[in-house]
Amino acid sequence: MRLLADYFPLLLFFVAFKWQGIWVATAVAIAGSVVQIAWFHWRGHVSAVHWLSLAIIVVFGGATLILRDETFIKWKPTVLYLAFSAILAAGKVVWRRDFLAAVMKDIDLPAPIWTRLTWAWVGFFVAMALANWYIAFHFPTDTWVNFKVWGGIGLFVVFALVQGLFLARHVIEPSP
Image (cartoon, rainbow, N blue to C red; front, side):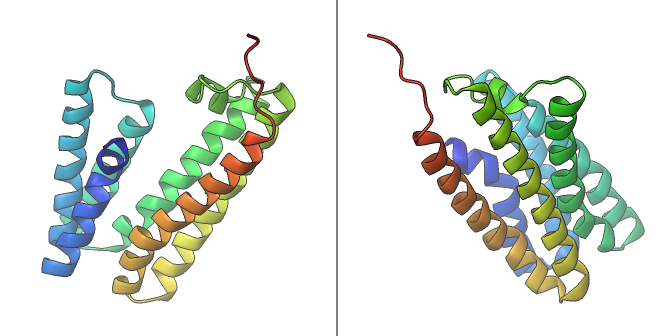
């Protein structure tokens, strides 16, 4: 259920795009993000990730609608991925903390593994930002939308599964 709630605005964007095009899809994504925040608030907790995503969709989606220029909505994923990457990198370099350890607090790992995991996610987010930028500005909008939804979700799932396999070897089991 959480996965569906996380991807709710993106899936609405896809359906609206296929049905009515980029302008309606952008408006639906903004509205869907507001509904998503309300849902998480009602359920008890809105994460910083969701607030950041809402802010970026409102700014870039709003610019798309006001200026009638789809360039802005195409930049949204790149900006979001680079923001995630910068936050994780700054956490490690500036504050000497692995923010992923705070997010994944139920998993006990040695410090060097958290560091490797953090840098792997930084690299993944940079790669996703570059892929989004390239596809958004070198292919038709329909191709970009398909990549943004299905390619993005697919790459996240594959990367998370690979990370899970890596982490399974390093998880510290609690003492009996």
